[in-house]
Length: 552
Ligand code: ATP
Ligand code: MG
Image (tube, rainbow, N blue to C red; front, side, top):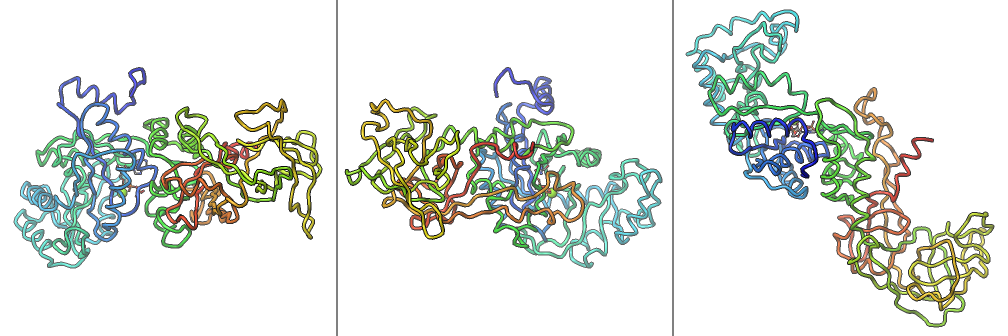
């Protein structure tokens, strides 16, 4: 981070804590629940947590918050690890809340022994009623007066499996009149006879978020525990637990979550999209998941840049998706290999070309002086785009039409002599003459033309499938829109172009290479792509045509 950049409010806090000598080094954590794939909102949290540690010289733990056995799976754990690594971050320790189940159980016993927790047999409805309302104090119930001994016996029996799911809960005994509803004897443990992806069937009671999160932070000696704004009311409980147990004083800080236009950011809803086949998979290139963005061709650099630009605030807002695309475009422009692909071909015959074929060279990336060149075969029969030819050209049409001249990219200037149509009246073949002395790089023709067209040599061209994408949702504020979010899915979010022809260099290019297909956009090879069936995903368009559309 550069010196002149001002600190965000969390960085300010860390800087002050370090200056005051509170800690020798900071330790943050990124605590995903392994119940889905990570999305771009998580990237914000990752960049913040790992970024703080990087900036201030400390570390970050990756902690799986796996206290809910019914929704969590190992597949999610693996994907989360891969995504964090791909974003460019390394954790100090890989931790699991489930590894602390024994310690947490011990903490619960401690609270019971201090008279600060009790077993309650009430139903969830009764508990809710007895809690009162924000303006009326709760009444509580007789279970609250159970003896320490009875509570201990019952809690041990809960652990031993003596009761059915929901029959009893363990609650903290705090304050039924507290204006903060979270302090009105919150639940600490519930019975859930479910198989856990790591602890198997060892446990049938599981700690609640509020009795796992802060405690796990403390067990790991986390100095700054950063979460999103909705946890502000939980902070008092977070501090209460640490104080009563006398454990390491981790501190919770809250920042505004990332919301983005035309998308949703909830693993639960993203899971629905996958399960109900609105998308192919979690890594469908239209998904706002890290894996979807990776598959689409976004780079870790561009996502980090985006997170840096949006900053960290204390108030919620909604970020324009096109800002993310801007960051992607910025990075890809610097690194993408330029290639030519024709999507809607018409034939172009160079009538006076007698060389058979020759190998020309074209710059890989004009933004990169060390980017080198690639071989591009040229021959008498080429493919050009249908809309690069006009039978009756308008005045400002600088592409091809009867008697018009253009340059073929990295090749020659040509002049259109005539054209043929098929039986439906569509242009089939365009005939042109080339000027041998106009060869790119050694042009002595003295001819000036305004238009440059991309092309491929027909006999060398390789067939490619292009996947082009539009927004996954039709409205800006999907989360805020009325009714079911799935009603707003854009039915045309994927278009496949299967007739495209690409230059043969594509067969030799690395699968990891980023491309700019001239005049078409940035592309990246899909995970399904093979040497015999190349498939590319359009990562992003060349320009933000979408933003302009909106202004119309
Ligand atoms: P979801 O509703 O998508 O499941 P979550 O908050 O339940 O989100 P977790 O796996 O619990 O997901 O989140 C891990 C970390 O990522 C948490 O610290 C959480 O605050 C943070 N996080 C989740 N969503 C966002 C977001 N949209 N913007 C910023 N941080 C987020
Ligand atoms: Mg969660």
